[in-house]
Figure 1 (cartoon, each protein chain N blue to C red):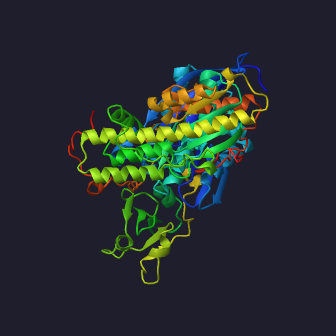
Figure 2 (cartoon, chains in turn cyan, green):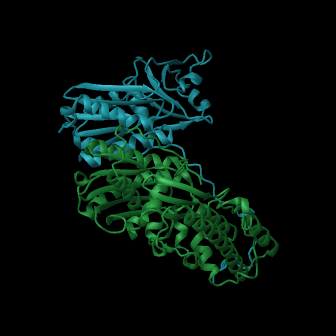
Figure 3 (tube, each protein chain N blue to C red):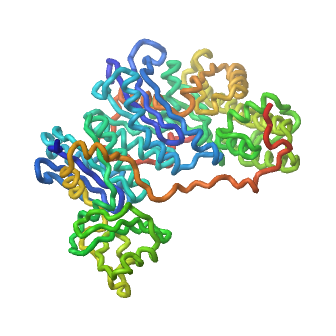
Length: 236
Length: 364
């Protein structure tokens, strides 16, 4: 069975977007560019969609959200909102890789490289076909590794995402900037989710995808005091 | 002001506990005019996750909150035998706390409110602690509050919902933070409070007499300071190396005694101020000192405060330990109190998460 009405949102990168798809078309969509403030913007954005189309909102039978990679906080804002809506509305929520949704939004006829600048010489990347179908799992790469993609066969690639600035320089002639927005679009996400069956959507958990471990450092044992009884440590 | 019972769902994710709870507020004729009932109170502690690091790692905490919160909300509803549609309001902590975690509870709460058409309240975590004694003990306004936890240490006068006057706060570490750091120094586990208390029971507090910062400083008001005490503990410990089990117990006892003396001294001052500034002096039996926050579970401290309160003509009220540490019931109750008092909720669902959010701008 296919969904009839899908609500989708993305807050993983430089925009906050939401879209409502109903019976073959996107009936409401909003996209606001922002580097921060997604948490404050998302629920008012969804509330506006609900107010604008209450009858269609009442028929939502599937939810879709980008799960990353992206900013840690942005990923969790979208996922927690949609998981909350899922619980309250009693409809399933499906999670989609941010990079795949960006690739699907591409417009170039070339093979696509999605590359999101995650700083510290790390790019969240995914190589996709010219139709936007992923050829690999999402991968964290350095700039040098990005530039080595397709070097063997001299492949021409269209780059989507904030990483295009560093990759598509005059020296790197194999790479060109795709005209698509450098962040995911909820309207693309909603349309893609609506193309899947309810069974397929149920197999896509809305669980964050980080690609980078948390900043957490274990205490340095060299800096600790010395104890007469290392095992007991003051056990009464 | 509503005269019927109010059911509120509360979410708490500001530190290392993921929590959801449902409380019911019923207006009645008791001292506070309200009766509180906890219908469910689900808490998932992250202590095991953070213990190897000797403290809370914010990014680990946020990742754990989002993995579990929606399931805990479902559990809280099921335990209370309620549906979301039975809620009169939804409340979530909006700060202060670790921003990554706060955002998860706040965003989830807003989404639940949007979908169910229920009013939403963005709650100050400190207000949750401040009002818990009204849920558990039916305490009437006004009262004196000592809030002692891993992130906070302050004395407040509580005159009503949203009506708080700060009498004193810490100038450096929170008291729970001081316990955690002392425990880490002594090679003990996390959280540090219970570890220090357990060792102190077998130690001699007189062997190491540690400083009592700010006691005797008449211009310090009711403020606290613990960083000097922590440094003194480190110096004693360094000098003792290699440190024996007996040393650790004695150091823990000395540290706990110093902290207790500081808290008791500041509370004595605050009780004097409270009595002086209460317009119509209440009967002695109704003057209350409420202690909230995770450190309130320390029995040594509780006994010392009981004695000090008694001498000052106050009654000490301490919520049970499960409601002193972070929980959803206190957030739900704060939301219920606000709803009952006719406060406006966050109708636009745009309340920000705040890493810092003082309980009150009013300072005595």
